[in-house]
Length: 251
Ligand code: PEP
Image 1: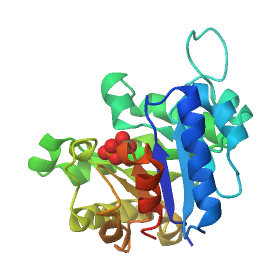
Image 2 (image 1 turned 180 degrees about the vertical axis):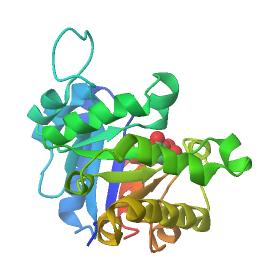
Image 3 (image 1 turned 180 degrees about the horizontal axis):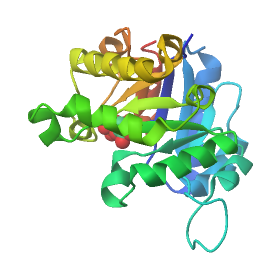
Image 4 (image 1 turned 135 degrees about the vertical axis):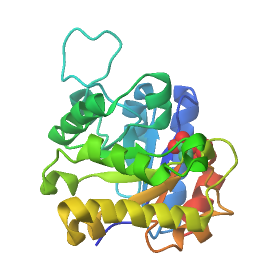
């Protein structure tokens, strides 16, 4: 059966010493209280090695926030999936809306990134979600289905089974505007049906689909209580240990 997961996305926040301190604090808090879900932090590339050395991998998973769409070579400034994997990281966020929006990531690039992540043993946390205009004009179900189909449906059923999805309505990210638990549930059920249509019900039932977008300790219990919401991808509220643990403890 699918796992419940709470994953932090630190984005471009914290210096290395600050990040190591935060990671240690989260790791210690998780050792003190047994979480009822898997917990992951996705951190800037510069932080991966020191954070890997500072946390207990038995209680806290580590991930990157992106990886390159090439294995190696003349791509100045890029960081490859093999490099990420060599730090001890086990996850990588791919297709976050900020990457799609500000760095022009397309489904084509994302297919390359997903393939390289999987080849290197990394679990992609693959983000999808509509913008406000698409929510308001009622095209959100088609938009999100297309992102899943274009980004992932080239995979074999076995490889698809290694993907974690994160539904993040763009209008809810960092805005303080959370999707209602009903809106999240409806979309997660829709995504699961789209997956079932391609790979069958068993694969769909086994896929973890996280919700992201202004999730915090106060709204996490209602969101996580929904049958198709399998946890959260957490931005702002992952930057303070108490806030993040409040969400983890919603399970
Ligand atoms: C995110 O960017 O993945 C996110 C969910 O951000 P926030 O929680 O800050 O809305």
